Length: 157
Image 1 (cartoon, one colour):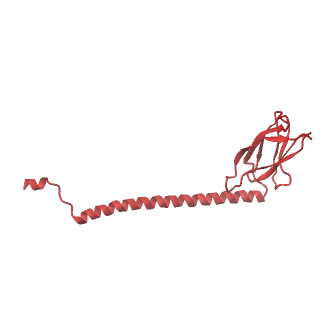
Image 2 (tube, helix red, strand yellow):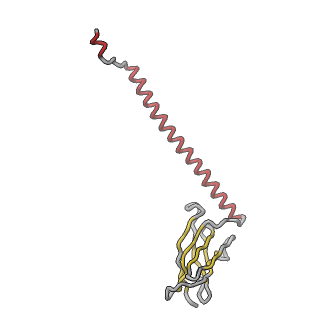
Image 3 (cartoon, one colour):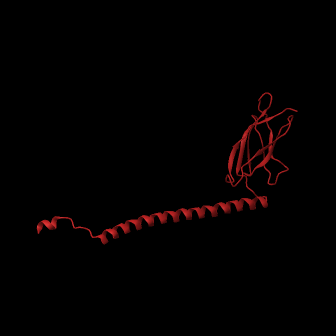
């Protein structure tokens, strides 16, 4: 009889099934929890994104959009490549307000803070033909902020 006690007890079918069901239930609960967390995060992101878009659009209507997009670069002469000092860089006056502007330094370098949506800027300097360029990104592909490097060449008059 002592030999029979040393042997591992044989598991009944119903006990083995219960153990497997508990394991499967845990796996299923983890999967459902992860799916719910992912769905919840997606909904929160969608609400945040929609409110950002609405805020940006409403600020455009009230013309109170803060400058969150930086356009920087250098203004140079087309023929020689020499820097054009004190060039004026501004949002195109034909565009929708608010309009921002800046002036290049003595080496032709500039940094214009403007809005992120696609629009035109105008680069002009005394003795040169003005040039109009397109800048910005669509807010739905790029959040309403960012930066862009833009080197400009102006033709002498």
